[in-house]
Image (cartoon, rainbow, N blue to C red; front, side, top):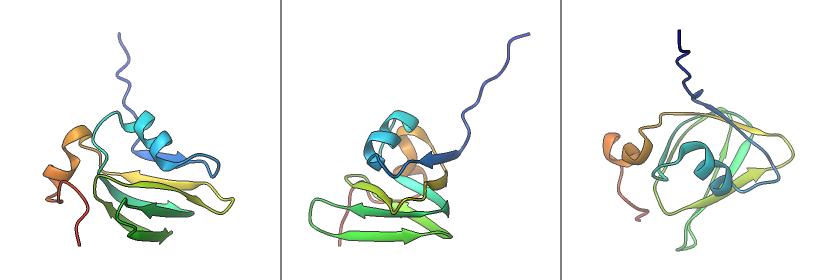
Length: 99
């Protein structure tokens, strides 16, 4: 019988790589992120200069159009609600960062 392989919803993000590099590889879809930061801290920045910092435990909701990285030496663990390229639409988020 064939094994049904599903990807884990938990993402372990290393301190030495940007979130974009890691999440693009992990998610292969849109870049809105909604989930729970279970461990560590992350920094999120937008092209307009807006910045968000999250430290565990925290619920995160990040619109498309951002970059980010792990803060400090501890890996960040994010449990993400992933609808592939349709995350922003499915959870009612804007399609980009706005003030």
